[in-house]
Image (cartoon, rainbow, N blue to C red; front, top):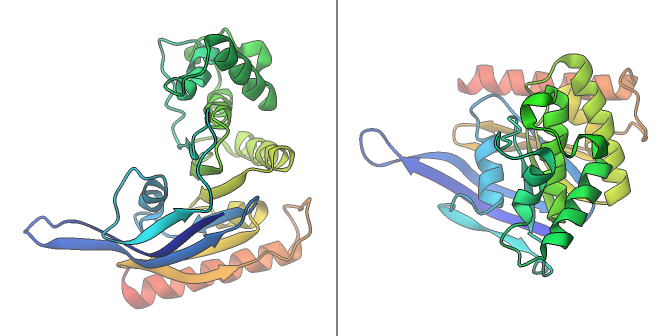
Length: 252
């Protein structure tokens, strides 16, 4: 569905020239796949999502979709670690925000916002203000806002990183349920290797300076997965060991 080919990204250097942060990154993302990108902090995971979303122009390479977005939709939905809700807009109006500019009638925007809120279990919170919600609820609103635009690809940048452990696990399970019900394709960035192995069809390790793909693994654990599955724990340990070797050997 999405093909990323030989992507490289550079930023201007402090003393002139440029600093290459991402080199020769390629990834084919199939329709309905759940792919996790892991790596050390600062390696370029979040930057990669922004390139895929078209927010940052790469130095080299391409991001290609196999079809154009349908009218009334957007190609990508973005969810960040911070919910980034507008405090002066109620919950429903926050979800409608991404629908503005698509030429949809007001009634249709409301219908789609309400449908997205129902998907994340927040129908009864539609008229509340963001400050009246818990951290987990605010993040659910952010997911609803991304789903409301009916994107081909859901880009998630450490969306549960700021939450407590119990809320994080709850939202992980809710995300898997949403993924099964909607059939959305998900590209999920996380520094939590256990989270990646629990959620994803494929786990891609990004490492180095500049960063490149160092490994790609498919968890063998059947869905629905158990957090204490022995194969999943073993895979997480192998990826962590692999990353540690790369960090020690390359000073990244």
